[in-house]
Amino acid sequence: MQPRTVAVLFLGHLVTDINQGALPALLPFLIAEYHLSYTAAAFIIFASNVASSVVQPMFGHLADRVSTPWLMPAGIVLAGMGLAGTGIVTHYTGVLVSVMLSGIGVAAFHPQGAQYVNRVSGEGKATAMSFFGVGGTLGFAIGPGLVTAVLLHWGVKGAALMVIPASIMAGVLAWCLASAPKVGDSSKHRDVLGTTGKAGDAWGPFARLTGAVVARSILFYGFNTFVPLYWIHVLHGSKAAGALALTVFALASVVGNLLGGRLADRFGYSRITAAGFCALIPLIPAFVEVTSEAGALAVLMLIGMALWTTYSPTIILGQQYLPNHIGLSSGVTLGIATTLGGVTTPLLGQVADHFGLWVALASMGVVPILATGLAVTLPRPDRAHIHFPSNA
Image 1 (cartoon, rainbow, N blue to C red):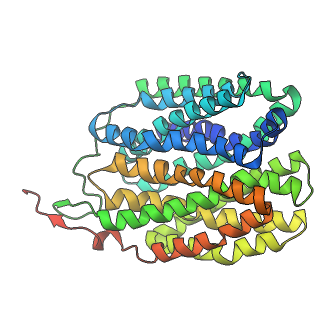
Image 2: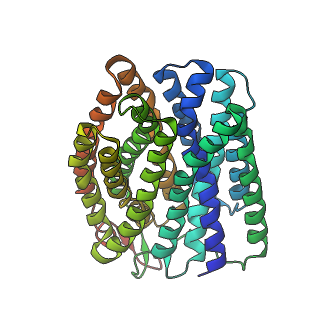
């Protein structure tokens, strides 16, 4: 393992996802600035995630074919520049273009980053991937508080300052990649299952895994987008309290991520994935029934933990189901499936506009049921593959 490289990739993931985490916390300010409806506000999240989802498979496929580590620092810079653009433009269309550019930057970083972690982590792939994942989760945790503090002081135009951490981190990552020891490309014909010969790709289980990850994404973006607004308009809290709730949600996700990785190593990736989704089934109804800020915050913490116990197991399962397409798998499980949840936010926004925020969040209660149904069908990787002889 190359600990320094993994640590820098952790920080790169953190800074990249600061931009994703900050976007929902921008919505109350953008609503006030441009007099937006909930649907129009949710469409900002939609635009960012559609842009990211469309190009994510291409970046993942490129990572399988060609070593392009320069995409990582370039993606970080573009993600920061796009978010900064929301503070520079003067109209709603400009905001949409800016967040789409940010989404493309995020898409450029994730598949190459996950594949590079796989390449430099040696025997400790699960540990390294979990550490890499925590970087992104911490970015989501830091983003809301950071952007809220900046915008409360400087207004919407203060978002332009978000390009500073992205530029610094891109420079550090570029220097680290240039000076890091070279490693062989492990993305092709690797024996991820410890068997002799070459493992064929298990596309059926991978498709079901992707469906479960999409379901997780719907839950994540639903809560991440509407929790600040729910806090203000349903629980009658402040903007700062709404941002704090997002931060607590993300910090709980860090605990869930680390816990999920450890439990998955002990009990199996597919089992912990199913258990995490199953735990969510009673938690979402509990959240919308609580009427106090303290109670809602406590349930939100449990939702964050349960939701993200599935994070590391699903990434590793995806890579093991597609051992010959590690980059593509990472692009899907870290990228397109993760961002597709943002596509549903305008639908939730329409529900909120017509029936209220309470109904919008309550309606997500069916999603973990569907996710659990998919997760319980996922086989162990060593039972999912067709194995070819080593001379095949």
